[in-house]
Image (tube, rainbow, N blue to C red; front, top):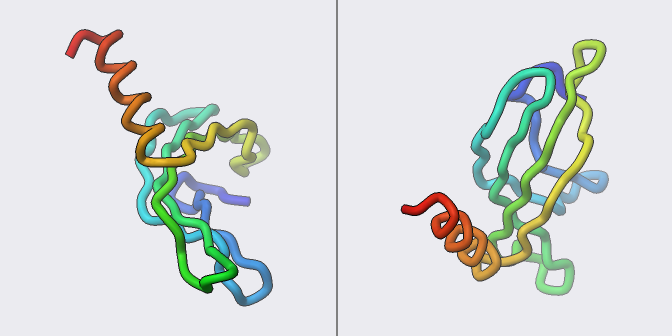
Length: 94
């Protein structure tokens, strides 16, 4: 577990093989509850290469000095991300 926001990552390894590669992250909110959106790729085991970009929004709660994952929403494709952007832009009026 992470003690600071900078230490929070979605990078994931199974033994020595990286199966999730974090490409970027943006902290959306800080505090006792922290929200972060990540851009990442999953390893395609058949091709032994990383697949298309995906996105995930995750909420963390800081308890006893450690950030603990509490919830997540995965955005599975660039197309789905674009639809979310369009919906939000429509609601916000931009």
